[in-house]
Length: 151
Image (tube, rainbow, N blue to C red; front, side, top):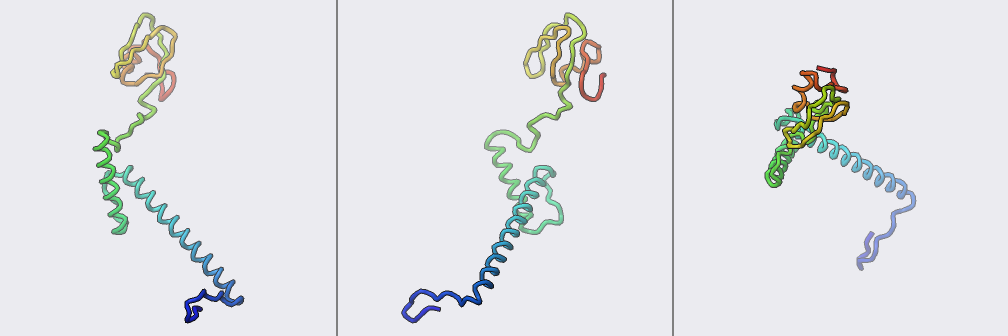
């Protein structure tokens, strides 16, 4: 308690200290749990924004819906600033590339859509975009080694 002269407070009585320490520990634990839950919800909202079509699920609270829309605005603004659509996948899926072995001799150099040239010598193997070698696989000039089977 403070004295009239504004001095320091007196420590609580000994019998009340254990109760105060326990109460303080409970408050700190509850705060940590609430912050962890809040962080989990925010992470799920971010994931939903990247996975969804931009429409928030109906079970969100008003604050979560606001966060969902504001986060979308931030993504759109940053995409505009860097000149790239960040909502499209930047890494192509594995199935768009195939490992092939050159079977037919004398194929020469293949210039792919990307502008990269590949020398297709008989017996060599390459990991190339499927769209660039699909016709050669069908003709039998290349053999697909891995993936969903040969064509």
